[in-house]
Each structure stands twice: as C-alpha cells, then as structure tokens.
Amino acid sequence: MSAAPDPLTPDDPLTTKEGWRRFVDYQPEPAAPAGAAARLSLTPGQRAAQDEARRDYHAMLPLVNTPTIRQVLTTGRLLVQLNRHQISARRGLILSGASGTGKTTALTQLGRTHERAVRKRHPGRKHHLPVLYCTVPPAATARMLAVEFARFFGLEFSPRTNLPDIVNAVCATAAHTGVELVLVDEIHNLNLATRSGAEVSDQLKYFAERLPATFVYAGIEVEAQGLFAGVRGRQIAGRFTLIASTPFAYGTAEQRAAWRSLVSTLEGMLRLREHRPGTLVSLDEYLYQRTGGMIGSLSQLIRGAAILAIEDDTEQITRELLDFIPVDYAAERANAATKARPATATRKQVPA
Image (tube, rainbow, N blue to C red; front, side, top):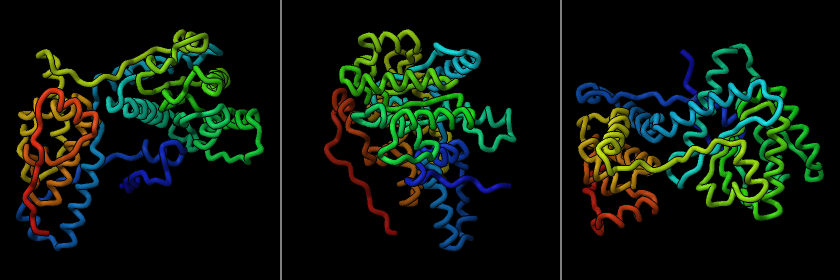
C-alpha cells in the first residue's frame, strides 16, 4: 500500500503544477479513535500521534457534494465534451457568488474530478497535465496574467522577456502536456472599466483561442463587478454559462431538509470517541443562524469544534463548545441581524 500524499504546504500552492498534483492526489483518511480500553494500552507518544492524526483529518474534512458542486461538475463535464473538437468559439463556465459560498471549492473539485478521470483513462501518461489552475492577481496586467499561467508550469522568465514570448511558451507547454481544462479563480479582480483590465480580458480571450481547452472562471458577484458590461462583457456573456453560488436557504421545509442533510453529512465524517450521532442535526437551526447558510462558515465551525474536542479530551461537540468557536465576520453579521448572541462565551479549562 502506497503512502498517502502529504498535505499541501505553503511552498506548493494550487497555482503550481506540484501543488495541484498533490491536491488531486490527497485524500484525507478517517482516523478512527481508539476505544477507552485500547487507548489506555497506548503509550503517551502513541496517544499523542493518534490525536495529531485525527486533528489533521478534521482540519481537512472531505468534500461535501453540495447542489452547487453537482451542477458545476455536470455542466463542466458537458462543456469539456462539447469543446473537445471545436476549433474556436469554445463555450465556458462562470461561477459567481458571495464570499464563503463555496466557489473555489466547486472550481477546484471540477478540476480534481476531471484530472482523476483523465488519469484513469490514460494511466501511462505521467507527464500529462489536463488541468491548469491560476488566479487573477489584484490590479493585474496582461503580462502579470501570462506570468501566472507560466508559473503553474514552472516556466521562469527574465523581466525583459516580452509578452508574446511568454504567451507562446505557455501555449506550447499547455499543448505538450495536454491541458483540457483551464480554471481561473478571483476573476472579480478583472475590471473591464480600466485599460489594464480590458487588456487582461483580451489576453484571456487570446489564451482561450490558442488553447484547445475549456475555460472556467470563478469570482465574487461578477455581474455587479461589470464583467458583462460593454463590448468585451457582451462577448463573455455570449460564450459563458453562469452558475450562481448562493448560501443555503432555510425558509421552506425543503430548504431546511437540504440544510439538515448537509449538517448530517458533515457530522457523519467526525471521528470523536464520545460524540453522539444526531447532535449537530438537532442543532441545525442554531448552526444556520451562526453561519447564515454559508458552507464555508459551517465547515469552519464544525472543524474547529472537532479539533478543540480532541485537544481538551471531551471528544464530543456540544452547543457550549460551538458557542466558543469564532466564525467569519460576514456570518457574525448575518447572525446578529436575526438573533442576539451572548456577549461572551467561556469554557472550562481542562488540565493538560
């Protein structure tokens, strides 16, 4: 049995081929907690190692297949098929929504799923790179974007290298490695109202014409950012399908059932000795109020509680523990608008 890939490190971000490959390969393994009797038989070092493995597992809980992710996977796979033999005017996909609604998760899961499928079909192609992932830098220029594409492949250029040479090198490398899917995150950093933003848009369009690949963008509320405005915006709107990434709702019985299903799925992934199944599902309304229906906030809340439950040896998630876990400011504001929160949450300190 081969060793599991190491978790991603700061030296291997997703925007490099090394980081992307490790992300595609990495699969968190559920570390089942030892029973009370078995735990007593372990040495202190063994107990510490087991707890560390479980903390790592809970810090990177496996992906939950949300409705948005399912829609992105279905649409993305279809577009890849439709574009495979297109010479030009290939269709693309844009994922747009508020921060914390799972856009990057859906985007990267599409790439991960596609790359794993390609590897399964062509197991002998060790140097194949079917997916390219990059982000649009703040205040980007066309050259900066081209350098981001190049950085993914590990291509380096001197400051004097002109843009056409960088672009040609990127396109040649992409063709040689078999890129089929290009994922561009943080597309809201592209401002079509500025000259540099318009040039970045043109550069993306040029890459889309040169590369025989499907392009998928993700960004924060791109409609409001003006991505579809003007001549360039109309060109984008005419070639891209838009999928909205929204928070979970809680108004109807069907919406509440979908939220409870999400909570139940996350709860089923927990590996805590004393946690009672169904505890989090029974707190579904509280969890919705705390997170505003944002999957990112919910994941942070549950993962953080699980890690603290291991650290203080209570091995269970309770309402009291959840009260102690901070969430992002956007979720706190959403919660404050619907229900007053206790001023301070405290926890009993457990001796080390």
